[in-house]
Image (cartoon, rainbow, N blue to C red; front, top):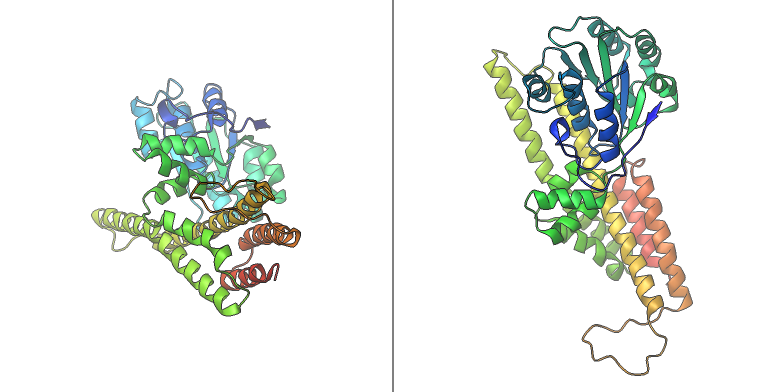
Length: 383
């Protein structure tokens, strides 16, 4: 079963879904479902699309006597994660295994304490392929008073049967216009908000951190400068790669500060509770490392997108230039020389090479070698 995805034309508003940016259709589907829920829902979307915030809001709506007013005690507790009938389950390792699935089944058999039902929220279902049979058994024999709110980045083929037992709600990347409007609402300058939104790739969390990054505009300018700096020599390409990777390391600084603050807060809470250390510290660090790795990859992909646009814009500008202007323009803007056919083909090939590199980056951990090879190829085009 599939509910509509996003495609709305603004920010999701109202009650328990206030933290979700855009995604009007998805939020509308969840709001309607909260009034007469079935046993399981699967929220599907990439990080930053609002899935986690929506899952939290939907859980509150399911536990609220009024279907998600956002102001009652049940809503406040659920949004804060302290409602006695809300169970948030995190995987214990790199993937959801059979033991995690068995733990879900045990939790599902509990009776609700205050509300008419209990809600179990579990993320990362896309990492549960080994536990698929156990999960399927749980969803085929659901307890009457338990609602599962599951989430995943995608649905691998091995989990298609598990997904078919849930109402699936899609969360596509958030529209650039929605992210820009959200940033302006947070006090960002409209011009910079648009620039940040275009580089966020539909990821609201990425947009939030980019807005706090003073070096973002400089990194974009660095990527745009690459076509004019490449000359086909490996030494030049290598120097540019080192410059790009150093800038990418700098881009991680806001995220790393956020992770350090979050870890310190967790350790303080553990100490206040009398713990001698932070339980699950290794898992917290692993999650942070995976997020930083994903952030780094997306930062490089954003840069490659800027590079592709630089070649594409140069091609478009040159093709639009008159072949022999009758009167020189008095404008101070530099004259655009029409491209020769071989130059046009070189820029078309450059766009294709950069696009292929961006697609390969998620599969290729050797980012230095990938970028060096790309820059050498780009420098040799049309020579």
